Image (cartoon, rainbow, N blue to C red; front, side):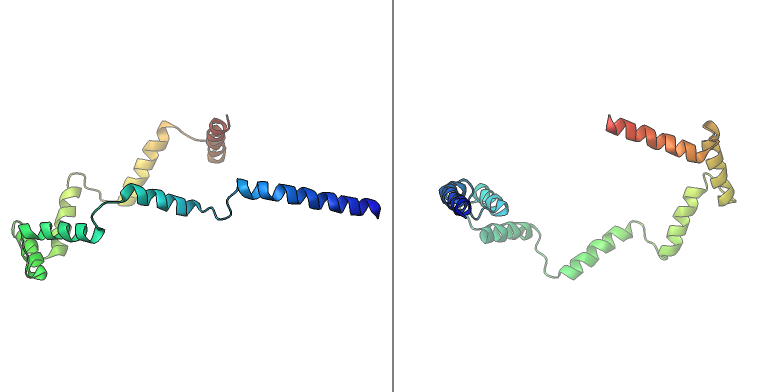
Length: 147
């Protein structure tokens, strides 16, 4: 009983002696996000309020070309772009463009063309056992990472 009491008192005295040191080392409410925001705030502070800067910027943009009706301006701009190459039927125009791209290399049977291309790629490096080839490739990749 005597040993337990002495041990308890020793722990109490040690913790009372260490507590002020521990609290001095680590601040109670340290927030990294708050610190970053304060640092950013110090770097970006200006003498002019943000609202005045934004208003002045927008004011300068619109002074060069004032627009009364934004919808009308957008329609006029779109009209000017499409007058150079008017398209009556957009679907027909897309099909014609696709047709022009495929005329250079016409393909009658797309499945056959894909199989021929795959065959040509695999002929250069024939693989007897695909599972073994995949395992070897994976082994080679992992060895380079581990070393």
